[in-house]
Image 1 (cartoon, helix red, strand yellow):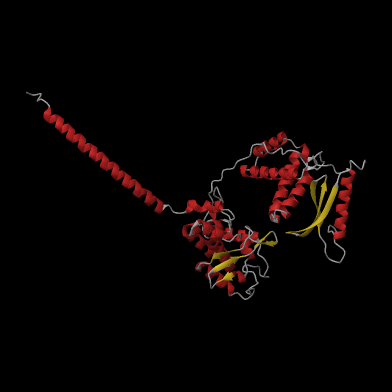
Image 2 (tube, one colour; image 1 turned 90 degrees about the vertical axis):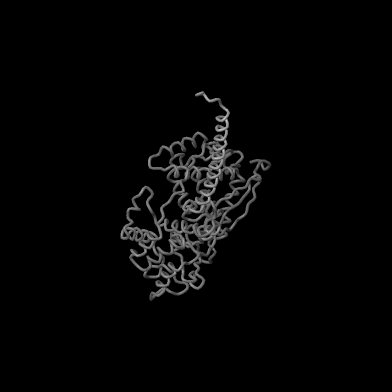
Length: 419
């Protein structure tokens, strides 16, 4: 290769902290165009790294190989073209959303299933990403809407993820234009409706619980609004009986302990009904120290979410509410949190409820507004309407009296037709 035509290549090794530990990334530039690629999980111990892990020296060797290929022209400049396959682009995008965007492993796993079950079969996993056309995306959109068993919401979600992946590919320079940009979006109208229990029904479910612990779980879920993972992560140090407060510091889902869904810890009021259930639970023989889990297995470990759901549905049946599992919108364990939301908006302003429920967006909290009783507003509007009606009636009466006097006057001046 003519040295004057050889691409200008420079690069560096980057160590990033992610949800699954530290990972090495290679960053290099080809003629000023930046590339970034995951090398693999980092190994910082002195012992021999397990298979799939990389020491700094090993990671530097991988990066050096990529940069050497780039200098030889084996890896083409993105402005000229690329052989990046759709599967490789998806994997790079998944690594980006997990480590750069900080998405939860459960979310990344859901994204990966969408790639595997929808993107790769539709377009071809080995298809170069720059060969995907607008027409291909339009056909994919049509196929999603026609596919039996797929809801419009699921189709919408798949298209959103495809747009995100292709947009990332363009940002990396693997494609010149985004074929998704001019494809019509799939819209979804949310009804904003969900299942809730009345206070009396919550008490019935609590009484029907298999164990004292289940009763406390149902009470805290419905009267404090904790999510399933937040209930599983709750520890006794998070329960402040004196100040009637629960501190929500963790969220245990898919065998991983993380911060709450919003990414922020929060504190919620602990009402007497829930506090009484927790106080009774605190009197058990084992696992009552500050660092122990409030809701745990007989061995003190995290309770299984599937077991919680099963026991909740069993309590519904015993309480005579089993029919709620077979309605058009079947009730779920998460609807205990919705029950708290519908109660909360009746007691506090929306900003306060947003904080207590850990919503990152006020629009989510707005979903509970239609459960607020409209009695006061109806009375206020009724009074205005009544005042308007009284004014209208008074005006009509005035016109009527004026017309009556006019008619009387005309009658007195008219000649007597009988004469």
